[in-house]
Image (cartoon, rainbow, N blue to C red):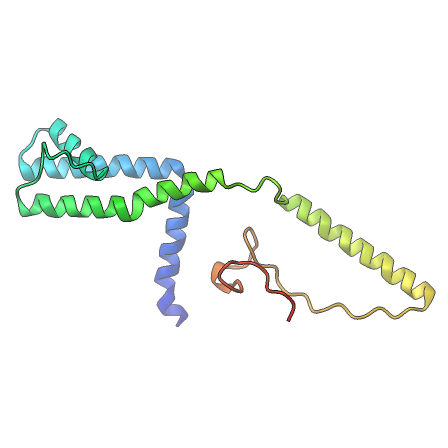
Length: 170
């Protein structure tokens, strides 16, 4: 089953990398406009300026209608350009900018998390030392479970639940 899902995981990782780079998004958008314009100009016998204008209008889904394809090749190119822009590029650009607006400034940095873990270990050691001096038996610690969530080393498909949040102790 994992072998069947591997291509989808690779595509997912590629899309995440692609979406997290505004430079890549902008360059790919411009490249799509230029390539579609060149192909359209060649197929429909239009000037480079008209072809690029058609690509911009078509990719933005404005569709003024001043320039439109008449050949099946031009219409196929238009369908591919519109579909790619509407289903992939525009949502990725929107998601990237939306994610920049939703930044949790209160989230712990990695160094802070490591410091908190070290403090808890130190407190546990002190508590055990005090318990030994007082003759108190401390309950055993539950087995350690790997931490999974945003920023953790756990792989996305190995994380419990869809949200990536830790599951409550069962």
